[in-house]
Length: 201
Image (cartoon, rainbow, N blue to C red):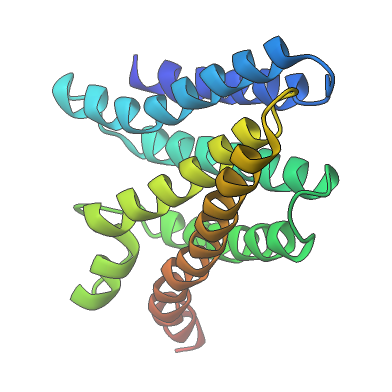
């Protein structure tokens, strides 16, 4: 069930992003907004269901990260393509994702998962920066606010004054999300050194 939730939110995001290209249709933007909120709700729901149903697994951890990546990549790229954010934002996010996921795949070969018990992170500070609930929630909330507020701001017919106020909040949230994205990637790089040192020895 948890894995099904992780996978289903990917399809919701594709639909939500696609609807935003109907630029003259307010209904399309409202439906996109609703689907985006549901998809972000699923992000926390899959982990909750996995714990409650005792379905925590390596596959579940991989699917959760895969869902996160596709969700954020789709939105960052779409926002840049629409001209709403600088193209450097998705470039940073995608580059960070490729680096951390590549290193996590090495950890997975050693039987270690990205977060939680049996994770690749040994250092307590690295665990907090990368895997603590506070940091995870902060990053998720920053992305959710950025994506949803950009959608709201560009709903056809939105009063200009309201649109600008909403855009300012969305832009600030996007910048915070980018900073957290980079910050949470550093521990993965730092902790991955041990795998390559072992191979050299």
